[in-house]
Image (cartoon, rainbow, N blue to C red; front, side, top):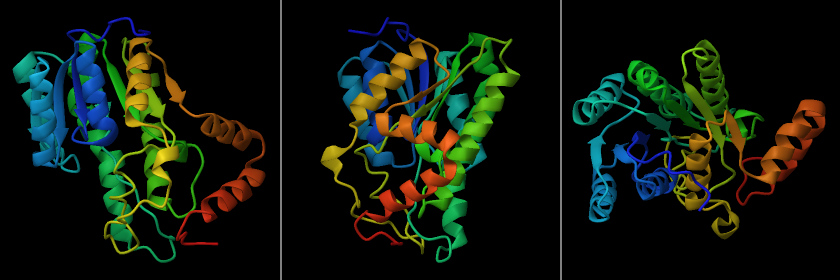
Length: 274
């Protein structure tokens, strides 16, 4: 095994823990001996993950929370500290996507995406920060290559990830002499329900994913990489070769990459643009 067991007995908060990458992070962290505080707005799925972890002997606390509300983020942090006495890692994983042309999208869709992907992370981090500074802990943001390169048809999603990465970068710099670790993790397209629940132009759920799920990253692989990089206290990770090439080429040939990204995304089934 490649990990160094540094997460054993660490108190880890994971948002969006009921499914996808969040659930995989919970399972991976538990396997490394971590103490878990899980949050999700889907109570039924959250309880199912909670029970599954308890059956493995993991120590786990679950809090039903809508992270778009600051008071519920504060409740999550308070519950964790009251139960375990400290916080070692905060993984801001909860996220939502969207797929529509900006020309056609209802602006409430963009507000919703920003509320989950950006403000949810800000609220949780704000209230957890004193405890994390006490433990010289880690703040993790699960971002995307869409936080480096704008993806057509996903204005709200890309904007939220650009904002998240800017926020986390400043957080790292402000606290670089205080022992706080900040990781920006960028998976590739991952086989999870984020695209099935992605918002269409009127705010309804997209439903079927336009991507071939069998060719995507698996949540377990993403979780393993993130946990490894928390242990190594890395600053950022881009998890796919395609993602790394996109970021590198965009630095030197941004106009060329505009065309490449447009053509690639236009090939999606039912693409909103051609």
